[in-house]
Length: 156
Image 1: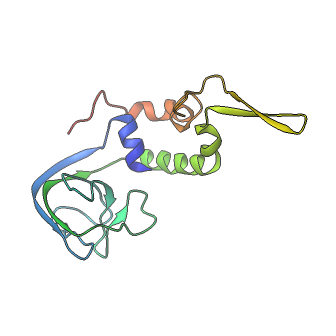
Image 2: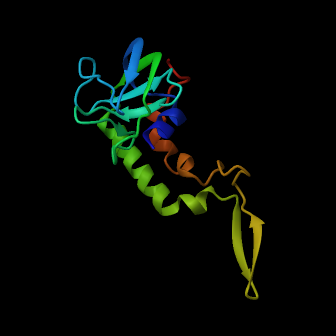
């Protein structure tokens, strides 16, 4: 969810960039010299593993830090972007993840259902886009709280 929200606000909170040749072996990427324990990072330039992760000495976690990420073994020329999202932003991302778990399926649907004499009739919901990105998703529900973190475009 962190990657989706960072992309949405066009801000990955990048502190530094480390271009170079990297090798993922056994699902591990040794980054202890450039990242701190628990620091988030974005991997760019990989054919199989681009994304946002959390670095731990005992293994890399996926962007929501709930379970171990399954990095595919590969050698690549790419960039490790060290991230430093503020704790307040991470708290909002956590709330968004909870909101999506609770309401996401219904909010993403461009339809509303109506029970007509025991038979469901589906009609287009007002304000919702056909692709589900309309005014009823988490983007709209959290817009005012995410606006302070928004940048005009992606920095890197």
